[in-house]
Image 1 (cartoon, helix red, strand yellow):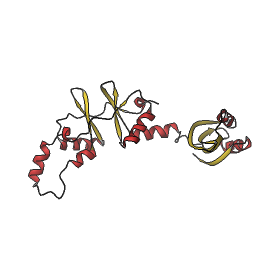
Image 2 (cartoon, one colour):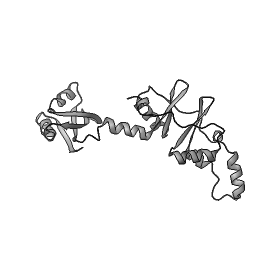
Image 3 (cartoon, helix red, strand yellow):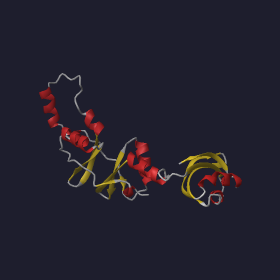
Image 4 (cartoon, one colour):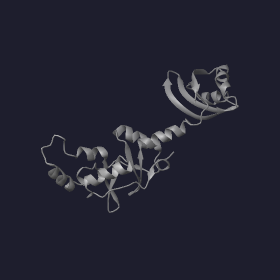
Length: 210
């Protein structure tokens, strides 16, 4: 899975001289949380709803409404945006984007093709991909199995599954001498899979409907 397969294409952008109030209204009306800032076709910054809200005067301010509105009308996105921007390439694996967001504690990344902004990828997009990869909408059985951490153990375990079908496998943990796997199985005689696994000598840890 690549970033380009899950990103939002052609994201809404703003110019650096866009007033903060206008950017706030854009985010509110469109339901977004971040706006790439572009000048002359080049990405120069990123502004989030938090950046914009933090730029608003405190409720404890002694400024009059007229004074606040005047100051906000002069405040632009360029003055509150984050720069330089952390980005990811469109052809990068999705897990690279997920790792970047986790390490940097950010909720989204502009997606680039060279110097061109082509999309934006967010934590929500990564969660959508996670749901798809694990087949969470396919039903069946979710089975947790501990298999020996040796070559061929996975193939041996898989031979006990038919006539049902494995639609996803995820490594849940590395234990002492074992790997804990979570399988999702669907299809013919899916209810018999746990018993077939046990009969084959596999350590079935948990079974529940998908």
